[in-house]
Length: 456
Image 1 (cartoon, rainbow, N blue to C red):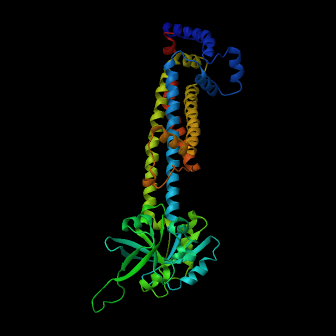
Image 2: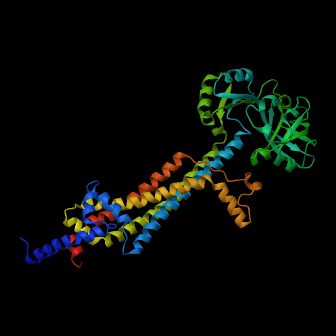
Image 3: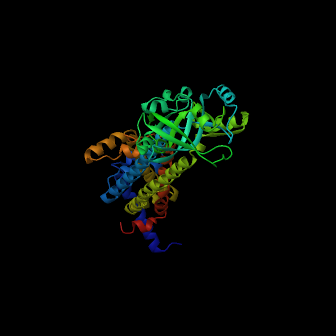
């Protein structure tokens, strides 16, 4: 049995609900009782009211301001994450292109004695449709000196006629040409940084010292020395190779390192660099060689692993920006729930279930997150596509160079958008926003109608 106070409160609640329905509809962006029924028949109640709450003019403008801040924060975080990941992808692509312009996609290497059947390897690999170039090489270490400054370098013997099939060094020559490396003339091509370190130019004479091969002579283990003439200078755009690599003719290298007709290995170029690891594994199983097969990901594993770790950490750090912005949704919806206590009570009196009330505020928060996500997606993609123009504008505005070509070896900021990065960012951001709506919405579903209308 209900006591007299409870009966009185229920009567008051019913009267308040009846008289307040029109007022409640009026808060939904000018909705009248008639069009409330007509629009409600076309969509679920929670979706209808959630959308109306988002568009409604509130008496408390501070709530609207916090909602805009939440949208802007989510949008800014997504735009920053998409832009940074795209720039990192662009840098990785640029550096990879520079590395592969000097090295090769796949290397078929012999053991210490070298690869004797290298001609058969070239003939066999060229039959593969995915392999577009092959060239033998000899690789060893030596010391170059101009009479005063010694420098330890990697010596690579190449066939000038085949080298352009597997690398871009021919197009990266600053002075001279690879065809100047003629057998028996002992010409040498240096990287720009190595030539600067040795203070040499085309026509200069250099002494090359290499470790002795074979057993000791009467005078002991004496390094062999040969005079080389600088016939060219290349610039790969990669500092390590420009500083530590010198090229000579493969015949001169075979003579210098006493390899007879053998070579250190065969370098291969494929039409799809991403398939190089798979092709290398297949060649390792099919080629009859006394050696092994490596690909570009193994040759530069440390660098590319470091880049991937850096990219993952940057993704986590910038995702925290989106997470902080998503926390604003909690305060926005908590204040919205407090502001709409009377409306919630009316809906409950009219028969709305707690689940329906919860869905109303989930819809409101989800739409704030969706709008912020879409704005961030558009802004991030637009900024990533025009990042070079933005950097140029900032450089002109500040009067200084953000990217110095002497340091970064690039004149503009590279950017490459990966669809997987974009969709992962958007999905995580919207999921965070959706999760943040759950607690305030649950609090709204627990509002007591009698308590909410007691002082109305």
